[in-house]
Image (cartoon, rainbow, N blue to C red):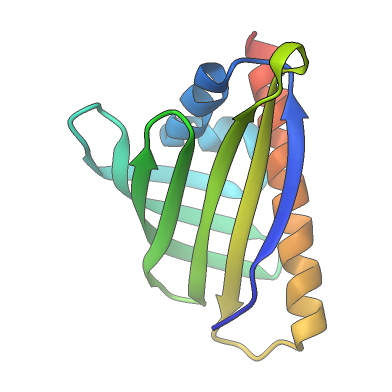
Length: 146
């Protein structure tokens, strides 16, 4: 199994506002640079997505993949890869923590692996770029909506 990579950021908004943007998977193509489309396949009793298919175009990596989501209140969400063409792992989570007046801390943890061989150092660097970019895009989206 691949090692996890994590990044953190503080977003000037409530945890509820941050989690609302994270849970709105269908809007990801509007604010993420690499997600082209999302189809939610199933939802829980609260209306949050539990399974979704994504079309990804991240330059050299283009894939269609399905993720299974597990929600833990307004504090965290995790996902695991169900199926993909290029990816063999795309498991991760967002964990939110209250930072009082400063807003909400968001930790993004990701394990990413591809069918094509990749040197560990390059894979970890790619994971770091993915997590950092995702958090910056999330921050821009949430703070732009507040």
